[in-house]
Image 1 (cartoon, rainbow, N blue to C red):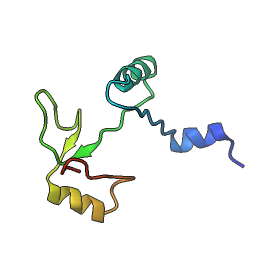
Image 2 (image 1 turned 135 degrees about the vertical axis):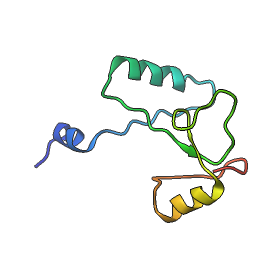
Image 3 (image 1 turned 135 degrees about the horizontal axis):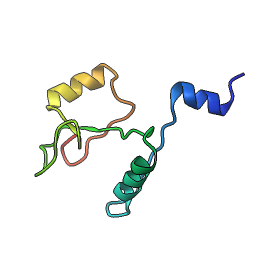
Image 4 (image 1 turned 90 degrees about the horizontal axis):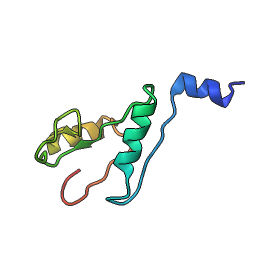
Amino acid sequence: MDTPTSLISQRGLLIVVSGPSGAGKGTICKQLLDRNPQIQLSISVTTRKPRLGEVDGVNYYFKTEADFLRMISDADFLEYAKVYDSF
C-alpha cells in the first residue's frame, strides 16, 4: 500500500490558493515559489485580451474563444468558467 508521501512523490500535490481580489494570494504564491524550487505555478488559460504588461505563457495563456472551445471538447481542463463574457 502506498503511503501519502510516496503518492505525492509519484503524482504531485496540488495546492489551491484562493481568495478575493487583494487578499494576498500573489504574495503567498511568491513566497512559496521563492522558498521551494520544487513548487511550480500553474498558468491559467483565458479568452480575454492581455492587459498592459501581461505576457502569454507567463501570466496566462491567451486563446481565442474557438481555441478555448476546442480545448473544452478535448477535455483539456480540470475546470473552467465563463466570467464577464470571457472564459
